[in-house]
Length: 351
Image (cartoon, rainbow, N blue to C red; front, top):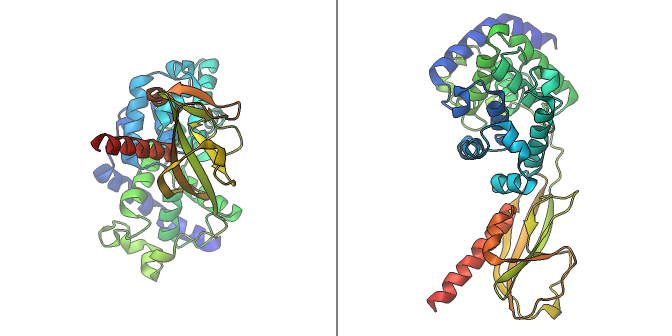
């Protein structure tokens, strides 16, 4: 710690002033930066978790157009919210967003302190600090992957970022660097600097305004920092999806709690079991479709079953008209299945 704080005291003013100047000249023009509406800012922060800016912007605009005020989002059904969220993944974020909107409406106003913002469903330290600083200019430093990378490289910190010591170290350092009256600009500058300049791969060191005082560049350790301990074990799951078509209808069910894609809908699913022989002739549409999630890899086979009589299915499956599936929120993997079915239909029409 002594080395870190010595470097911080020596370079603090240079780092902060240079970063703010860089942001003024290079900061990204994003629609939620044109408002101080905490609802719009909170919505952007939730959407942008685990999401690229370009994709997230389109979803933010869709949500703001559909529900320009938090009261509208709170009044929506969970199915409506999940349907709007479809394609973003990490669907617990959508459910938390919906629940938090109802918390805000019940409170009567958007919470305006770090502690109160953090009480919203799905809001952790980073999101609470981002909203508090950007919407209310409160002196709360954000610490995310971009911040870890920038600070670890500039100050030469090799404490693993996914340890308790690392989190405390970087949070304290970011808070120490934060200019109290320019919290909003500083936090957004840190986000953009990590996303544009000090990137994970091939950072723009030759054009970096902090190059002369960057410890990692001076020591040839840019590619080594930040340090992260490898603790994640990725598991593989094999899914068999059967799209059942019976007289213009198809069968779907809602996924339950405690697993991936909670609350979303899907066609008939078989996992860890062979194909049922009683279902009739199945047409294989695609095999070994790979879908990567944070903690697991999904390998899926897609089948189509055309039948005249409804097969016997578990009680939680419902029958809907095929076009109506567009009204149900489905995981991205099921979207791929529906695309495969559409391709097969198009091929049949050409024959």
